[in-house]
Length: 279
Image: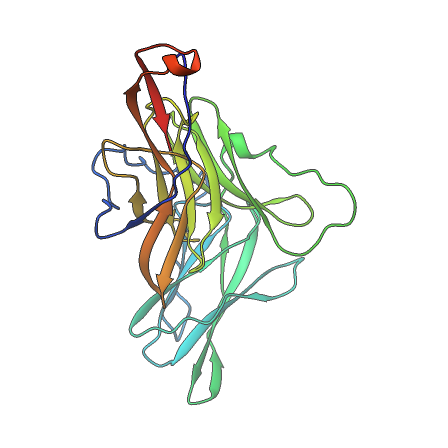
């Protein structure tokens, strides 16, 4: 393209008009398999299973029957760590509770604490070994200067031409969470949305060439909720996606898109026939 002008226009696209689950983008083929998968285990007296999170070796999925509880959480710890807890989950029947922020190839203990009519009870303890990180992520860490603060730093990295990851580092710079998006398209702008889900742009976009791109919305446990993109013939830019909610129901997606239109720029010293990208 010889010339391009950009008119910034924020497109607020109601989800009723937006094809949130796009048939055209390639669906992720799934993460690399864990090299040390966990085996389901059963705690005596309560149906408590610990299984690997197929999206993240630094996470486990605890499955428990919650019919006897109003709400439940998972207590978990390693031999050299203090006991930590997931948020409480309200469930009926069988509930899956993701445990996040674990370390690779470490044996953890898990117990479920349930509340019924103001009384808390605790299940028996189950132990299970977490898996190994993908080879690309094993040396990855974040280097900082000064005094670290609590919380996590979220960003995206890519093994160029092979796969991409959305990753989170703790205050020491250690990798504590990730979600892989296999394929040649890189992952870009990523954030946590108001409802706790994450979104990440997958694709290439310099903002003025017709490259395909889209956003994945996915849960902290890794499951993709929906794929969001501007409807054709528009192209989706990676700056940026904001989701708005009515209570917990997704109401609208707000994003920048662009299209290419023929234009005569001779009045400004440009070509008479060229394509102009408008945002």
